[in-house]
Length: 312
Image (tube, rainbow, N blue to C red; front, side, top):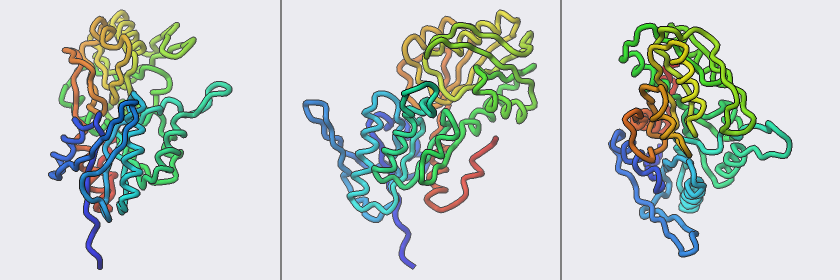
């Protein structure tokens, strides 16, 4: 029987902070990638060690700018041309995931475009977390290991030991996620119904359910401008909620997000390190996903089931 292909872990420039934690948890050294930049902004990637016959894990979140996605594509191509045995893209935050369908005429489906580019570049497998829509897994014709931050959030919520706990969804689209948490934690659930005239602008919001005297936890997969989250928190406090906290996997936090969070009724916001914070905030707490991804990489490499990674 031939020897097992070795494992090599690399990362792009913007996700190095997380890749270093993952490699530390796995006890494996992070490989070196040389990023060659040209004066016009063009760049090239080159591995500084052999990857021939190796399982190559490339850790890179594809948050803005699009350079992060293109850098990942270039690393995949470089690994393929260097005769890597398997190329696994570890994408904690999968960018363009909100564009998962045609919700109006003549628009692109960005998530499918991203999936096609990754497949064409030569990736063998995808490991990601809390996609904006589960069906994005079907955009790929290769295996996709879809992890959930619930394996980190649920134990933390339990340790908080909040009385009169209520789980909330910030919109109708997140009802399934909130309902799953509520059933698992054996708590009631409320829903925020919002109406938008255009992206990132909320015209009207209503709370469906009772929050009076309750400690509310709002769950979401990502926070962008924080308009929905902070408006929901403010309305819930006006309705008599004892406290409002939020747990969201991906802290995109663009535009006025930090200012809105600071000025809102939110007491705490918990996020993961799938995307680096642009600045510190006393209200924002970061829970690391490094151990989760380290364990998953180990299981994938050893052809083991990853179902034990899921709590709910």
